[in-house]
Image (cartoon, rainbow, N blue to C red; front, top):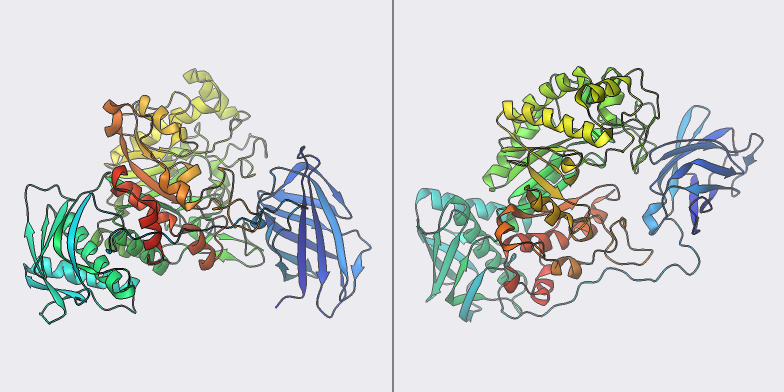
Length: 636
């Protein structure tokens, strides 16, 4: 329990210079408060030229704000200090856009402040909240994502598990592996596979079928027996996972789902890239949470985790050549080189993965047929690096010569400095040794268009190479990074801005189209291989309804589960270029995801929406069937 409470009210205006946040700091303790400073972190930021009412000495770094009361102010228990900040960078649209955390510093002590949700403007709240239809079950079988072909004509209520009537040691081991997956996700449910028969089991035989693709499988049901044919290890595991889902559905909802005894399933994925992106820089996820997420992806037959390990807010990967990246760069809060951001401001917020952790997590992913693509976000989003190693900045470049869209000053590695490439050479060498994926994702997004323009070293490089502006400087940088990756046998993946400034040769480069729907086609027309991940549909931090009380971000609009399900990533693409659309990806950005409850509310069931988009052909999708199943999907 804290002794100070902060209420915040949003007063909008058509002109953001006139928009206001009004605050009331209430003393709920037993001591008089005076001679202190207040710090808070909020997504709705004060502008650089913001004005204060009944407060003074505002400083801001990205979402972190610190200010003081008037010098003579003191307030007794039960009293409030009211003040206002006028002039905002971005409008508030939802309750989590206000202060996420706050603290006062008084006589050298840090005192946590309880932050209430941002209060809505008068008459602004529609009241709409996320809703998922109860759905309609057209076939009494629980599978997600839905198969390409399913024909079942008879069912039973009697079967509760599957026993392997025959199988090789590897096939039996695979069934045991899926047993473990099912038990981790649903500890209250029985194991789906047994290795001896009983009166309530369905017999199962497995057959390797060289006519099937590696990820393909087929299941035939007849006379309370099943035959699973598979093309490769992935197809075998996917078929076993589907059988486990069928058994789980029959267990958890016996009035709705049953076990098939006559019929068939023929199945293979629509796309080769069925991904999920996880941001652990803004809010760190413990090792056990990452392992749990991998289990969830495997249950949905997703096969890629793009792991966003670095950003302005923290560097989360141990690099032995640069140990300070995690001893200092993975921390923020009072007394740290980086101030608090996005919650937990009153405490030292930290966390990183050791290389032993990475080995364990990568091994678990490979066992589940999941490729982990590490993301080291450069050249922008590099505050954690540049705060840790100021020598990597051009010392002649003025401070605050540019700011990122998130408000960080001078946060991009300089493409004109040899030190930059020496650093990346060592970092990518270690990253390449830790992750077997053929890709390393290098970010490349949201570099401010004024970056480096006041750097004398960058100016010299521009003159030498006949480059014009930030975008062409970044393209030069990307070309050099691509060569570094190639030395280590890796290909470059990045966000869609990698194509800017003339881009780089698209051969072998994979880009994530995120900014808007049309970018997928634009990049494909330029010759890139593309993963579709538009913020409007596949960013899982977007709000799911328009009401003020619905949590989440809204720069891309409202992303309801049903609208996300209806999105078709291939729309508008020329038939001859469809093979350049490599797949789809859900993106879990963590600015708002401060606890597990918020994580689960935002991520589920939409992550399975993307799983089905990646696996199931559009003709086989059915929102009502999906919605009916969604209450039985596992969550974090």
